[in-house]
Image 1 (cartoon, rainbow, N blue to C red):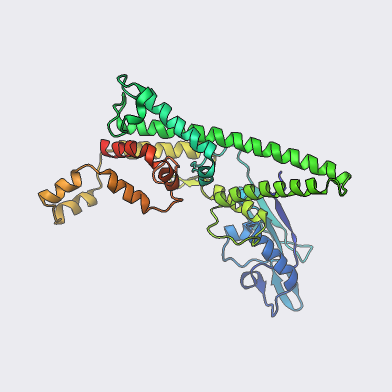
Image 2: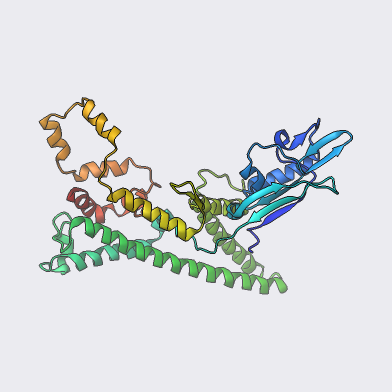
Amino acid sequence: MKNDSYIICGDYNLVVDPNLDYHNYKHIANQKARQVILNSIEDRQLSDPYREHFSSQKRYAWRRTNPIQQSRFDFFLTTPDFINNFKDVEICHSFNSDHSPVKVNLVFDDSPYSPGLWKFNNSRLKDMEYINKVKQVIETTKQQYAAPVYNFNHHDDIDNLELQLIINDSLFLDTLLLNILGETITYGSYKQKQLKDREAKISKCLETIEQHLCENNLAEYQALRLELMEIRHRQLKGHLIRSRSQTIEENEKPTAYFLNLEKSNYINKSINKLQKDDGSVIGNQNDIRAEIKYFYQELYSSNEMESDFELDIQEETYHTLTNTDSANLESSLTLEEISLTLKNMKKDRSPGSSGFTVNFFKVFWKYISGFVLRAINYY
């Protein structure tokens, strides 16, 4: 088990929620220690499995009779990646202690998680090497699917809106973005390995220098430390992006906070349990995927229309468009219209399912705008 994934439990001699976890208490016990626990819960995104199962139930794991007091001092805390493995949490009755045992049922599924949706990393747009690679992919894809009547020694003279293709416009745009995606992933893996290798080399050099640190190597030592700091800062920015933290002040939260937030976002977009039409609940990932596939196969293969919806259409009176308005709506979009729409979109958004952001399209708009327009108007 990695050190950033864990389950902790015990007699904390404090409570998280005084309103739910105390009975007949006038004061909150161990306030300093309690604050430490609350800070850890916030920073590391910890969860209380009992409260996940029983959000408002008042049950107590410790009690005394003189005076009568009860509290829930004994509880579990877990990182987000384990919370769905707690299938049951129960505070049992005790007979020989003032503490009640807390019993949990942990179930682990070996089925691998499906990959989530890919989203473009906008920081790549500051890398000229990557920019040039994407431009090359665009040119190569154009040459591959252009009609065999062109001399690509003079391809710059060919307008993308006029370029004849051997496949339809929609399929060409999908193919182009898929080729760019492949190059982006390959380049990203290469840069990541390059960065890790450099980090390992710097760490080894620092370890060697620290054993014989003196005035002669102090400047080199400081320069290597600065470079290592820049690498770690770049890695932290990646965690910030994947954790989808909207605003962050320098040094406001520790790195562990964003690592756990990133992990939490991944878990939250996963389906861990699914209730079927017959009321039964499934938790195996293979069963969940099969059920989702079956549901949508049935949904899109059905030709039946809901009777209430059909009745509403028959009974309602709707305004109709004029012939002029209808003709305007049916006409093809223009490059000016889609360019203006792109300009007004938020830069970090991903229009469509390709994962490429608005910023990506803006940077390469000169090279792909014609193909985007053709694909939109194809239908």
